[in-house]
Length: 71
Image (cartoon, rainbow, N blue to C red; front, side, top):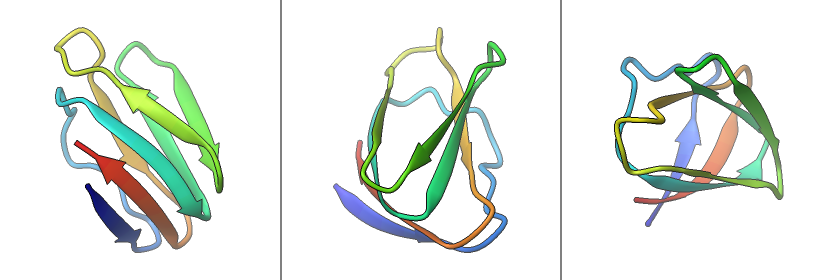
């Protein structure tokens, strides 16, 4: 478990295959799946990414966000 403070303009530099549970504490955080779907998470919402190579994902943001992550 960890809390991550994201700088404005953060974008993952790779497609992640690890499973995560994300909970946005402040701001908005986008999760993109390699199949083209994108989910915009606002403060108080969560997302569960699978731990497999079927659903690669990456994260990004526009402003400053604080995200609670469970790996």
